[in-house]
Amino acid sequence: MNTQREIFFRHLAQTSASPLALEIEKGEGVYLFDRSGKKYIDLISGISVSSLGHGHPAVISALKEQLDRNLHLMVYGEYVQSPQVEYARLLCSRLPEKLSAVYFVNSGAEAIEGAMKLAKRYTGRTEIISFRNAYHGSTQGALSIMGSEEFRNAFRPLLPDVRMLDFNDEAGLDHITAKTAAVFAEPLQAEAGAILPEKEFLKKLRKRCDEAGALLVFDEAQTGMARTGRLFAFEHDHAIPDILCLAKALGGGLPLGAFISSSSIMGSLSSHPPLGHITTFGGHPLSCAAGQAALRTILEEGLAEKVKEKEKLFRKLLVHPDIRQVRGKGLLIALEFESEELNKKIIAQCIANGVITDWFLFNARSMRIAPPLTITEDEINAACALILRSVNEVISR
Image 1 (cartoon, rainbow, N blue to C red):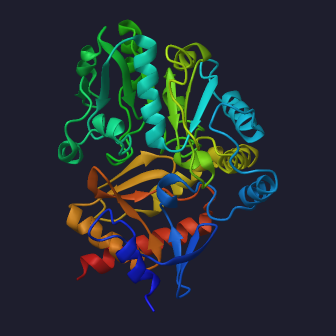
Image 2 (cartoon, helix red, strand yellow):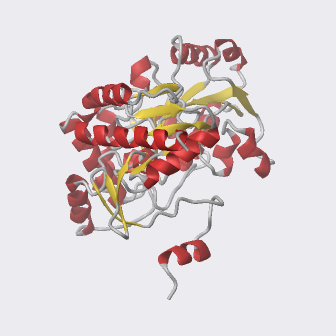
Image 3 (tube, rainbow, N blue to C red):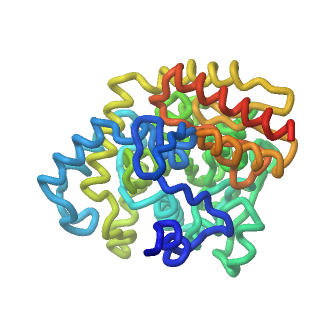
């Protein structure tokens, strides 16, 4: 009989030559358990998805309740569905007034695609500007504004009229002009290795977009839902976008994305032509029920407010001569090592020692730390001890 591992490699499409291929049987809190019963501390949360950890009772309860009601009913936007309506209201109650209309989709990439279409339709312009080392998804449109030529070149031709700028380069903002429909940016560049905005860069970006009549779009797929210590990362810099894209933790562990704007901007998708953006499974009742339960838990338990102290503890403990730099905000942290080779050896050793970490797509010298927001002080202590042990074991070889 073929093992699960053999079937995985035979029948599931592979995205790399060397997937982790861990056979995880169960998740509970910050822990994952493989088929042999080995326990791992999950420090990446499925890439910032499982903000409440695995199997949180509030999410499980909401899913069971919704299962007894209904699953899919109709394509998004045609029926009044309570999970969508209530989640949209909750989200908008925590957002600035101008972000009052939610379009639920399936993923971060679809949120970006929808936001690109919305910006072009509303402004009547075609140019899209984004930033080098930004990740916005892997679909054709999202790939067109991804900030990595290595990833883009193999799939050309891509969308025309796209311009790349350098994050934190104020001089480059002059390229935002009356031709620009929208500028897409992460408030904190995640896959670049947790790069923060400097010298009020986001405020200056907001100002330049206003001057040029361009829309500002923030991609908070990774940084949203309290990951950085505020519910949304743009709140740190007091720069409000015209369109906000969310995903990952938005669904409480289930597939869900959204692009959010004002009613006046969003309304441009509903006519000339009507159904300017449609999605069959976007805002699925289960996903919205899970996401709403997760957000309510974040708010009721004050998890965003607790993130800062947890970040401080990680920074206090993760001190080692071979850790060149610690960057990031909240519970999105990058540990930079001398080289990609060294970092990946340490990551492999961490996994062998029972702690799951990862590298960043556009900064392979840096180790990703993005645990569930629910991680405790004792769990942080244990995880950091395993990381430092792993560093020492690799260095001493």
